[in-house]
Length: 144
Image (cartoon, helix red, strand yellow):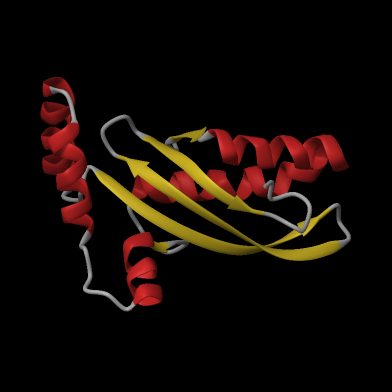
């Protein structure tokens, strides 16, 4: 079973704007794509997305802050219970407990036009979910 999908407020607004503007069926391609990313997170394949830290590093041309460093910083701020869960997730998955990823996919909207949608999200191995932070959909749908 794929990880659960959660949305930060800004990403939720983008989906709601798309649904209100073009109807409920308009977000079906986005939802299907996000489900495939959630399944990828569960399986740990990394075929549909890239490490967001590496992406930002390439853009900024700065030294690579590894996924482990990002996870370590998050671990330091976590509660004791979450720290224990994070260690257990790390041991069982052999991956950082929190990973930051990005993906792009060409989606067909309203069965009429194609758009390269992008998403930035976090994989939370501890709570078994992905958290969508940023969605870029067709013009007028991406919010402020």
